Image (tube, rainbow, N blue to C red):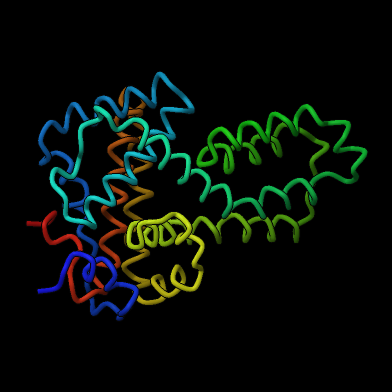
Length: 266
């Protein structure tokens, strides 16, 4: 019988193409509700997002990272108690935000270089630049996609040619597509620096493009539902974080001879 370490590393050793497998959306959505004290765990997570932005968002990212690691390591319960976990969640959430920020930094830099006609104009709008930087540093997952769109719509001194818009689209959507695979490397290798092993990141997607696309469709659908149901949005977003993590963890599980999610699906 393979050890847990062998099972965790097996996706990198053998990215074999999937043979018609499908992502199990039902299990991804429902596993949270099968965990002990899940209402309390999700309730606290959603409350943190609601009352402590942006720290609550970072804690949610960290808790998702912890749960994903427990899924890979087959630790029970999959949803640990928040008690004594805040420090770890904050550190892992900050590291997760750092990965997102690093992947999208080329886009953020290009946005200002292409959009502002000169350094003098940039200096003249240093207040807006400072607000942009602070927002992105505080919470990259929302600010990086949201602030450029807001600024481009609000400020007429930001102007882009068609080819510049095309380039910015590549610099934004390219990293966004890669990020879930990057975080799968983190869960597999147990260190955040693994997110920058671009060869592994791309090979995993190449090994199962259909599965990866299915996971992305599920992630977008879950996120949309969470945002639409406004009264419950913080709690549904927190739930969707956990469900989306499960969706993407199924990709290496499907291409590996040792299923990572066997205990979750049982």
